[in-house]
Length: 452
Ligand code: SF4
Image (tube, rainbow, N blue to C red):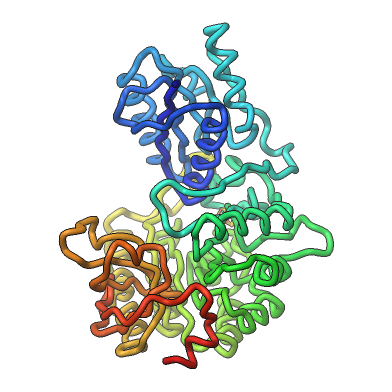
């Protein structure tokens, strides 16, 4: 039996797509092997979000070629889409497929085996207006399922290369989303995370259909789903209708990841972001009315070109005042090919690092404050595996619906199930808990609230 090995760089969407590509190989009779083993085919799913993403992608490609010089080396993903020539120039690369036409990958491999000529199959992504439907019935080694609902982004923020790698917004057919969700629940997943390149933009290219409707349709049509999470949603996409759905839903979790990037209007303008801080604050207020104590996580870029100390402090104060519960802090890093990389007033690395540290310290403080709201409460956790991958500890880790990471004594049988856990010690990055009981498959949130 022919073998295939995968290596995935970058974000959740890439990981999702590797599973989809694996399905295509599986259906053609391939066996999956470890990337460190000798394989007949290597698929490297690359990332280009930063210049480092490109470099790491090239290193992994070279590693695969060294591993088995006779293997078919197939490179796909965002870096493949934006820079096919750079990848084709690496001796030993046989096939380059970008972020579309993945379904043809197997045909290219057959073609390559006959002709022994390198194939560059990367086309113009900007002309693509159709979502490429790929089936993902399950995930290797995971208990939280992702479900991709859209592709591409129309925003063109000045620091971001992604629209050039992924093209413009294309939403997945809602019927297919519901079908995929049911398939995942039937495979045993209790939680689904809706993902995409610009997830909250779902529906912007559809007529008479939007994200709020999709959330409602999933809730009413998918049987057995316990948790539905949106991986990321912009403030501008939090319409009153979406907020109403969040308030009324029994499965959409009380956790939202809303990228902030900066808390200063002048920086946001240079970033070409589509909201002001006043607008962001107003949406948060509406959300807090609808979902008291919801968890608010976010991404922040520190040291964007021209960021003054005052502008940085506007960000810092906004985050503190609005009680974010977790931040992913990124020092701005020049991405070649973007307008921001050409801006004057690039910020000194030392200043960037110092600002990053200030925000990380604030993050620790806010994360603990948020967790402390739940001390001694009984919450539902889905254990994902042994704490720190050490089964002998007897401790397992998992997330609550509001995204607290909880470590507690459990057993292997509980992994992937909904378990009630009492939070005994709050902390960050994790809280400690005490097992209460495993929830019955038929219990609904309303019934269990009544039990406790
Ligand atoms: S919204 Fe901005 S940062 Fe996000 S993918 Fe689109 S262009 Fe990039």
